Image (tube, rainbow, N blue to C red; front, side, top):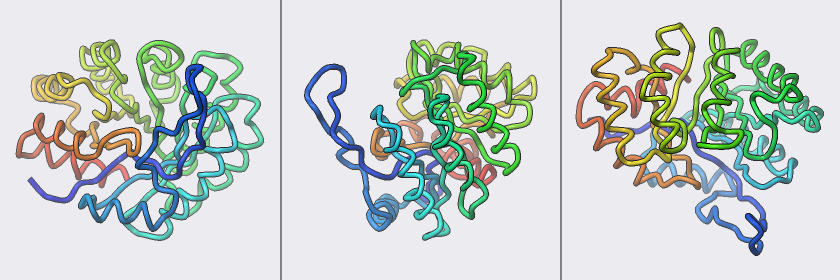
Length: 273
């Protein structure tokens, strides 16, 4: 298997301490990089050949992720190995911030738009449709991929996020981050929904970051059994929230040494970006 790895989802910027879940103010993103120099040094140390970098997010302070759009763009324009995604909020109260972010969508180095419902809003909330529509319109106009966080339960559950694929997946590439994000998401996606979308012509992609141990092996088996999906899975570390070495070891154990491994770890990223 080729040594070089292409990472389709990692973050730049550090978040401020915040009292999550009613506890004391904490900072958990200890490996977050606050400078382009530090970010590029990580790529060098890992042997990561190319990467898509996204603003770090996760605290309910809207301006934090939006301000990091500029750092992600700086990284993409500083090194040809890097492409970036821009943070877009689904919430109507962030409309002006979204306007400023979407104004950057045509800049050199921009390859994706990123949204999540962890900080509010929902894919099936009528109040969010306008901002989501603006994001997908911009992605279509600039030929960008939309990255959407998935996790089981709540507003990020695949039952709800999947509505974005149904509504916009015919002509916009949608990367469902984390393969559903947990047991129920894995079961729903690998068990059929992901392949059904592919067969129906949806431009849907995913990765195995945060995946439970069995999921990557099962995913590979289903791709081989069904004969589709080999071009829809990408490697992602989700640094600093994921663990690059661990994510890479899990994927390599699942794909072994062969064509599928080359696609997941390198070629699918190259085709998409």
